[in-house]
Image 1: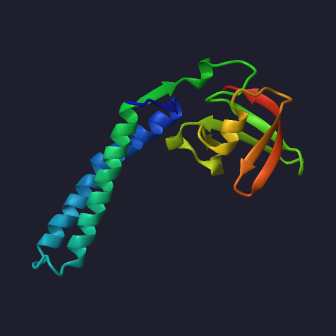
Image 2 (image 1 turned 180 degrees about the vertical axis):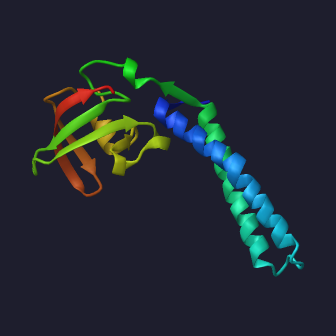
Length: 157
């Protein structure tokens, strides 16, 4: 069984989602199904079919979360150090064309969120950064074309 790298924050977020889905969402959906059944004929009951669909999606997500958490390899980023980029590093880059600075934290696939600056370990940028150090230049083959970045800071927070 393949392990899934994950930060402590990622594990906590997935556990919180799992708890919410099992203790709040599941009972709400069961109640909605019960109410829809009370309306009579199930073959033409849109509320019943919508509630069953919601139940199916919720149970699928619960199964996915349980699987990911059972295979999680939780890495405490605060205990990491060094000068090279690896899982859990917070990397500050400067775009060599636009001089724009960007900061990314390299995290597991399940916790990636580009809007909050968290990129997946399997993303093109993260794959290009792994093993590099401060002042290294990195060429990233992105969907919008190749980009060049210079690493200006690597930290583990």
